[in-house]
Image 1 (cartoon, rainbow, N blue to C red):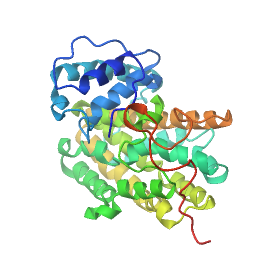
Image 2: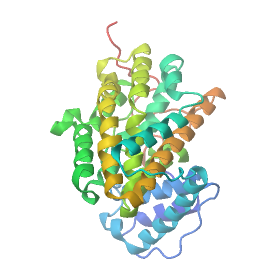
Image 3: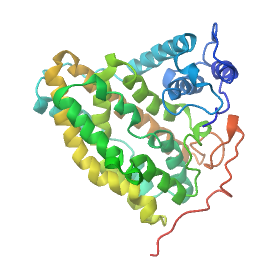
Image 4: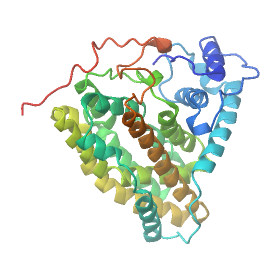
Length: 358
């Protein structure tokens, strides 16, 4: 992956220095401004800092990962992001959650309370044209091409039944040891079927702050042990709200001519996540709450963050499409080259859909 174009004074400052050998950054400029969740400069800077703990960037020296001055910048950005989350996501009321059944019930109530308003999944199933579906896939690629990795940070921070439950879920995410069944690889097949560049991070420069925030929140929770309860709650909400939307996504893509290979990612989640949601809510979060009753409220907060950011993401896409404009930064969901040059080599937009023989 290459660094995209900067989006403000902070990312301009960071990207200029990250392509050099590691050194003390010195004082960093303020982000461009605005509410943290929608701040393009802040979210891209934070995503860049986090990405150094994943696959990194081709032109960035790997020693930047633990450079103290960069970590100090990240710490400041994280505090702003956490403050923005606290404003946007009220903490669920405290309640006795010390048993798996209580935790499962509390998570179910939280999910049910968030289920309202216009549905992105219904739109993609029934009304989206091919270009809108491709836009949706471009947005999701920022997370799905590293699917499961951010939540995996929790494994060494757990013990007992909660740890075993998380490993059970993650084993499925990674294809049970079969590379071609890894969910990230299944998503790459969806992207190829839609004529999109499926290389890791190819579309980073095209997605807006709200999309970056949906991924950044998982890395924030995953990279800090103090947030391990929130990370589990996030995963539980993710699994509990996955099966039905993915069934709709599969129907929508088939309606547009997608073949079985292009739809397999969504088909897989219909079945897998119906099982995962029970494991996540009862076996993982329930066991964690029983073992750490003082952190049980954090589990619900992490779930609430996942639900709120998903709602904001859906509102951005549906609102953009209702106005007749792209939900991406730019004009066509065809990827971007180094530093936002707009190259992707995939040919004209809208080509390359793998169609079924129906």
